[in-house]
Length: 181
Ligand SMILES: Cc1cc2nc3c(=O)[nH]c(=O)nc-3n(C[C@H](O)[C@H](O)[C@H](O)COP(=O)(O)O)c2cc1C
View 1 (cartoon, rainbow, N blue to C red):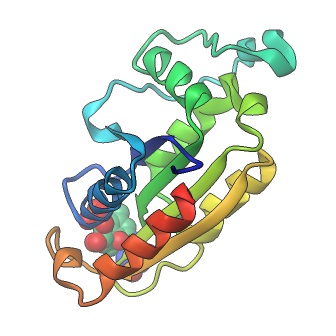
View 2: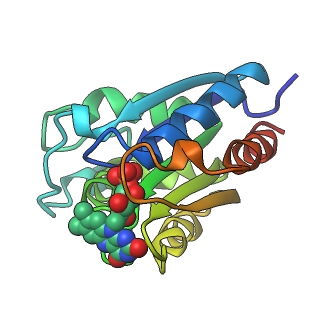
């Protein structure tokens, strides 16, 4: 029996590329371990930029995801609240996480106090060096008092390169065990 039953994976690349392959491969491993996995690809969703209005703060620490912007996030907030673990996958862009994923993290302002204690894992891929990318994901988890369970970094450029990296699938399987365990 896995401890982290419900797992949400967030794909933060604007293309069907390396980080998305890593996320779906990890998701398949988690499913094999008996977890209930849902992968959300931000590139396919309507998620507008946070406006900084802070209307979400009215709910205080018990906030339910009441964001002034009515878009795809409305359906995601309950999924995040119900999850035992969240996996963030991102390409390294200018040494950092992608803008797509950063905006998603900003939009979690409407639920963030209630994500404390959930498990968090990261996937980061860049051509030459991921630089601060994984640390960006860890910092988010630290700020929210989530439990960082680990991450996998890879170096790849073109969309299918990661799928050909020797040993990467094994590293994803090891991470899956840590997330579910
Ligand atoms: C806007 C942009 C910025 C990038 N910045 C970096 C970088 O700073 N360092 C690096 O090694 N690769 C960089 N890359 C390359 C991507 O990280 C690389 O192609 C990666 O495989 C993309 O992941 P994806 O296939 O999941 O989208 C950049 C690519 C783009 C489009």
